Length: 249
Image (spheres, rainbow, N blue to C red):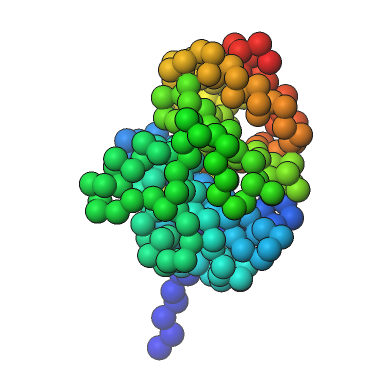
């Protein structure tokens, strides 16, 4: 007797968005309701090591791709104080990697019984972590979530957590039974007043936001990888300037 079985749906969409730049996109419903999606990004450095913005679970598909890329994860990065829930599983699986995040995140990690290996500290922006020859960063000290923008020069790609959204998150919901579209939320994207309003409402210091938004705008980039929403594949700098137009970009 033959039993028909339906293969399980993949949990994550793994894609090479540019040479040596891989994204891991999956569903994430904020407050168990809002379909914002989640995404991690891995970059294979010229040294052969892997730099990883870790914002999604370390599942089997993610492990398989990282193994294919050499399994040499050297940096595990938290892009703000909110995107940190999966850091420990990555550190446990890649114990030689350095976990780096905003300094304030160590308060949360202390409750878990551990600390980051290194920190992004707005009081010491000159601090080097080992990947700066290929990936630059700007700490948004004037943003409530203490976000950090990262710039991979070789691929002209900027990455961030909550600095810029591009909803609806259709790629992240590719294999999901949940619809990526949600009323009003789908307007949280570039060239939308909702995106500009969101940035304004999450501003903690205007002058700091202006300074750091300008630093990102001065980077030579064409692509933006958000944690929430679709990758902005082209003309991302124009999208950034529109979203942050409040700061005179």
